[in-house]
Image (cartoon, rainbow, N blue to C red; front, side, top):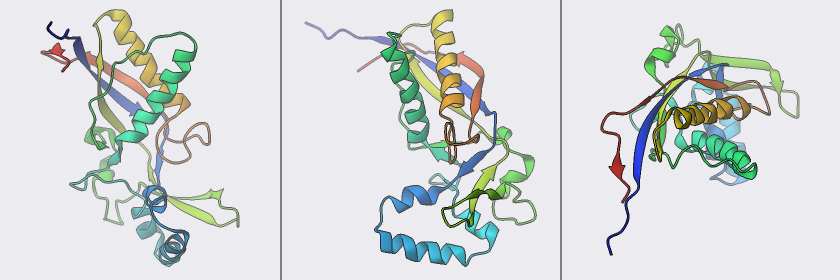
Length: 208
C-alpha cells in the first residue's frame, strides 16, 4: 500500500517591531561554560568601553548578519500553541522550516543600524541605567529601536480562516512572549506584530 501524502501550504509572514529589541548573546554563551569562566569573562567585559561591551551582546549569523536565533521565535510560537491546545483549539500551523538563524529584514532597521562597528552611527547600542542587577549596577544590552523579520510556516490547507489563524498566532506570540532580553512578561521589549501575510507560489508539496 502506498504511503498517504499530506499536502501542505507554505505561508510567508512578515513581522515588524512594536517595541525595541534588547539582545544579550552572552546569556546563551554563559549556559555552556562553568561559573569561573563566566566570572573571568564578566571581568573582561566590565573593563570594555560601553559600546564595545554592548557589541558583544549582539546575535550574528554565520556571515555576520544581524538577527536572532530561530529557536527564540520557535519557543514563542510553541508557547502560544500549547495555550491554545489546552483550550481545545487546533494548531494553526503544521511546522516551520528549520533554520538556525533568523536575519532582520534590512528595511526594518533604522538607517544607521547597518554600521554596527561605527561609533558615530552605532545608535542601536543602548545603555539602560534603569535596568539594574542585584548589586545595583547598570547593565548593558544591544538595543534595536526598530526591527523586523520574515518567517515561513506550513499550514495543512489554505483558506481565509487558516490565514487568519496564522496571523493571530504570530501576533499573540509577539505581544505575549516577544523576542530578545527583557521581553514579555518580564519586560516591555521585543514585542512584534504581523504586517503582511501571503501564500508562497507553487505552495503545495507532498510531505515526505
